[in-house]
Length: 72
Image (tube, rainbow, N blue to C red; front, side, top):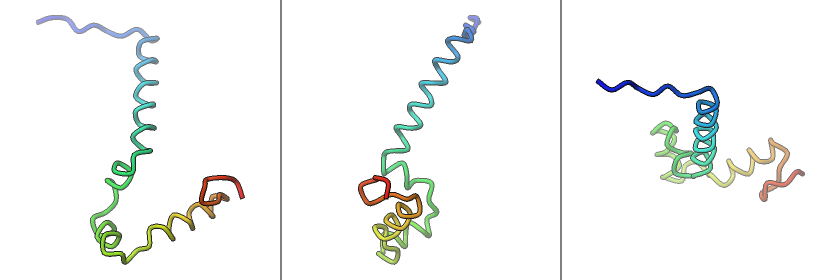
């Protein structure tokens, strides 16, 4: 059985940084952002029972941002 090459601390750091980049990029993809939501919530979004635009505006306001993401 071939030996597994161990990474140096520098290589481990580079791998961890790359992983962080992918996680940040994935978080910005709407499809991936809604995947963790409960099915019941997704059903309400799909039926229009929850106004996603209103919800997003309220969340932006609570963060002190306008609809363009700029500080109020």
